[in-house]
Structures are given as C-alpha cells and as structure tokens.
Amino acid sequence: MVEKSIAEINERIRDGSVHVVTADRMSELVEELGAERAAREVDVVTTGTFGPMCSSGVFINFGHADPPIKMQRVWLNEVEAYTGIAAVDAYLGAAQLSVDKGEEYGGGHVIEDLVADKQVDMRAKAYGTDCYPRKEIETTLTIEDLNQAIMVNPRNAYQRYNVATNSTERTLYTYMGTLLPNYRNANYSGAGALSPLINDPDYETIGPGTRIFLCGAKGYVIGMGTQHNPTKGFGTLMVTGNLKEMSPEFLRGATFFGYGATLYVGIGIPIPVLNERIAQKTGIRDADIRTEVLDYGVCRRERPVVREVTYEELKSGMIEINGKEVPTSPLSSFFMADRVAKELKEWIERGEFFLTLPVERLPRDTPFKPMKQTRELPLVKDVMIREVKTIGEGATIADAAKLILDTQNTHIPVVAKDGRLVGIVTAWDISTAVAQRHEGLAEIMTRKVITADEEEPLELVIRKFERYNISALPVIDPEMRVIGMVTSDEISKLIGKRRRWEWKLKL
Image (cartoon, rainbow, N blue to C red; front, side, top):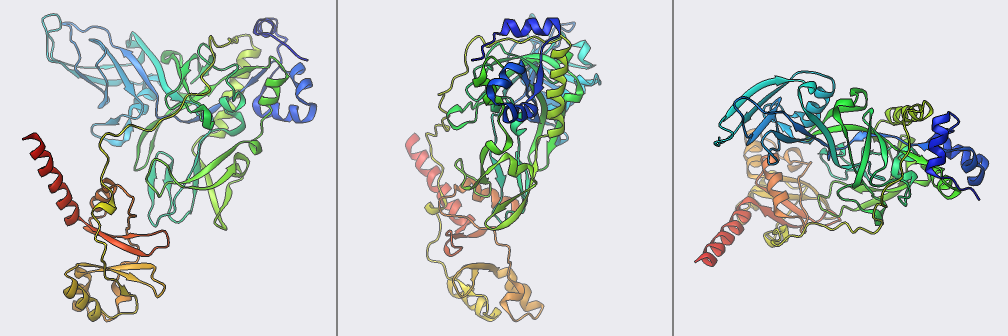
C-alpha cells in the first residue's frame, strides 16, 4: 500500500529528488508497471490543455483620472467591457465583440494584446456626479499602466467535450467551429488523456485552492466552474491568475468564423500521486475516454446522439458515421497541451512550483438544469399549414403553374415517387421558366431546400427566413416526407393574435 502526503512531495521538490511525469507518460508507466509500482516511482503527474475557453475574462482597475470619472461605459480597442462594479473597475469578457470589427476582433484579442504589451485605446463615458464630474475620457495604455489586471475565468477546462457534426444540407457556423453539410466533418475539443479533470475524475486533488499553471503564470482554482455537470462527466473549473505575469505563448485571442470571438487558454494542473488509486486514475488512456457525437443540425437544447466514440478514435483523424468515413478536427491544440504539461513539469523539477491540496472538494452531485422558461416559444406545428399540395418531380411547368393557380400557394414542394421531398418550386421560378422557355420542372426547381420540423421553435424559422431571404418552407418528418408548410404570412398572423391578446389583458 502506497501512501504519500503533499508535504512529503513538496520536500522532494525542495531537495530536487521529486519524480515528475506528464499524463501521457503516466499511462505508459501504469500499463507497464501496474498502479502500485507506478505510485511508488512517480510523485507528480502534470496535465495540460490548450483550447478555446469563451467563458474567460479579466477584471481591470484603470486608476482615477483627473478630474475623476465614474465610468458608465468603457471600450478597449472598441470592445466594450462591463462597468457596473465601481468607478474605474471593469470586467472584459473574452467573447465580447468589437463595435466596428464585429466577430473579427473581440475581448480575447484585447486580452492577448495586453499580455503582449501592446498599446490599447481606451475610451469611456459617464453621466457625471459631484464627486466624479468628468463625462468622457480617451487615452492609450499598456498592461503596465493598469493597477490590476486579474484574470477570472468562470468556466474553463471541461472534463471532456461532446463532438459536433452536421446532418443538414447547409454549412453551420458554431462554437464548435464550421460544420460541413451531410456529416462531412466532426469537430471536437479537449486534450484527451492530458486533460486535467480527466486525470482526477473524482476531484480528489483538484478543487478550490489548488495551485495551477495558467497561461504561463501561477494561478489557482477558485471553485467549480459554471455549468459544472459532474454527474454526466462534464466537470468544469473557475480559475484566476495575474494577467501581468502571463505569456502570450499560452494565451491567444481567436475568432470562429460566423460565430464570434474567444480566447485560447493554456491550463496545466499538477496531480500529486498520493496513493495507487490516484496513480490508476492518472494512467487513463485516450482509448478509455468516451464521449458522444451530437448532431448540431438540430438546434435544440437536447441534440440527437449520432454515436459514441473514444478520444483515440477522434485523434486518429477519422470516425465512421452511418457507414461513412468522416474526418475529425480538434479545436484544441495537442502540441500546446503537451507544451503546458512539460513546462509545468520543468517548473516543479526546478523547485519553482509547489503543490497545494484543495481546501474543499469540488461538488460531485451538482445538477445542471436547463433555463426556466415562463413563456414558451410557439412551435412550427402551431402555425403550419397542414393541407399542402405537392407535385411530382416529373411534372411539367404547366402542371406546376396550374397547381399554383388552383391552390393560391406560391411555394409548391416537389416530391419523388416514394413521397420524399426533393425540391421546391415558386411562382417566381415559373415566371422565369416561361420567359426562358423551359418545360420540365426538374430544370428549374430548387434542390437544396431549407426545411423545418414541426417541433422547431418559430424563432429559428424566422432566422432562416431572414438568412436565406425566403418567405416559406416545407415542414418534413424524419423520412423527408412533407407534412406541412410554414409561411411568413402565418407567422405574422400568430404574432398579431398574440399582441391583440396581450393588449386585451392590459385593459
């Protein structure tokens, strides 16, 4: 039976006899030697992850101006920070977007610029008071001009991540990166066997007070992160550290095209091997870590599970979905995660970093609840037209024109012989076809049809109307058969009814 204490390990760090390995090497040792011998030989296992962590940010104190100002709003390089704290304090979130550059530049980029000692333009507005009379200020500053710049990240270092793929006919732009149509790629995040919480799944050594590597500086775990979901294996950490001590090598602003700004954060956590049980847990391999592939083409809180995979499969660069080989892409950097783990290992070996036990355990039974909604959104089934005439793909343009005249519907779904939706034709298509002397419907119909399902919130349908400049779309079942049609006119009628009802209630 192997038993060690933090004090014993820290003494070995002081005298230079400590034995430190990275998490990937520990898995090899446990497999080779067994957990008990590995626990005798190894004192510390270092972990590392380097990936996009949107829930990150910095508390800043600018110091007082002359005359003083109580900032009501403040912008750094045209990225707004939150000022509802005190006169010259603000919190800059990594995901906040620039006023003028949009998703190309955000809070994460400002944070990187500060750490890289670049000049940042600051402007602020205020309403003016007797003790803070100034109403406007503009200046240029660097990180050294700030009194404090304290990184406080509400949610970092997810224990593991779901994988994202896309079953629809169109490209999706998400926080999991760009997802190509028809399962043409699958994106994932996390460093697998190197990830901190994967190596301490029961939170024995990681918790409030644990000293960590944070973006090239020494930081601490504050407590559980937001959306901490330990019962499902999705634990998270809230962490803090001094931004002035950080390195741009381990902290990078980034943009996900079509989604927004984020911050790549390097986190490394040492795990003291106090006994063989902890040694066994730090011996985890990528093949042991399982997660689910979710279909992000279904925009709901609970997305459909496509299949289960291991991180070993994901790292191979290819997984199988519905009999098809699908390439996988990591959003995290394995190279940088390894750099973090090795850098932390060197700090410990040089006697520059000592270990701490948490002052209390992270909760292991915290439920992760969905948002309470007191007013449910109307769904497609609440407004869709259920009696919808369709037309076969072999029909003529004259047939389609007659159907439009008979039904007074300007959008006609086109179906195959088995009833599956294969296209859509509009009154505008018919007019164009007549002018260009087309005869067959197959020549003019739109084949990539934007669709909805009956349980879809109308808010998503309205977004589709705006995005694709359309005014109607077919409602389909899982077999791609048309069960209805939703139009902008029907949505307008529903909204009008709701407004009249609310107005009557006010009376």
